[in-house]
Image 1: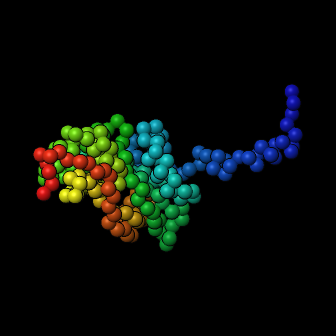
Image 2: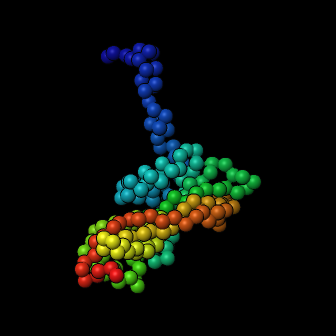
Image 3: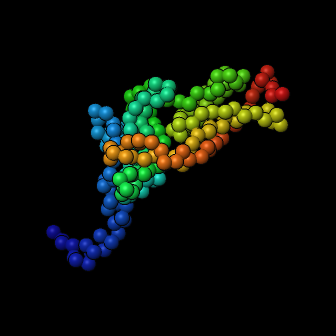
Length: 205
């Protein structure tokens, strides 16, 4: 059997990227009930890989990924994601809010951000564009957002505008990696998540 030379081993090690070498060392903390937060994260990674990848991208090491399982405003079981600083400042750990996802096995329909109930366009949007509307509702919900329906008389379309708080800075006072309040409420942000033509019977005036 051929044995690798010292030069070959050095060359092999030099080709291993830092990201690959550091794989699996991410610190995950928080409160996930009876399960470990690593197990909850693993489940969500299998169901929503793109969202988990983006959350982790926004929380580069050595910062700490924090998860908190709970019940949202619409009685949806969900997981909130935070990114915590590795070091405390005078006993307080600061972080940033990343987003939220439905807990695996829960009713995803409860998680979706609802369309405005008082809009005359809501029923038609759900009827004609159900798949696209659900996708927009899910995306808005991951930001803990709400919807406004904007109208355009020029081309007879409506837009779904999701508005939410961006740049929220939570703080942890007791070391449990759960938010004990906010150092900053951030700022109001809005994002268009879809433009949809409406039928002649719903012509915008």
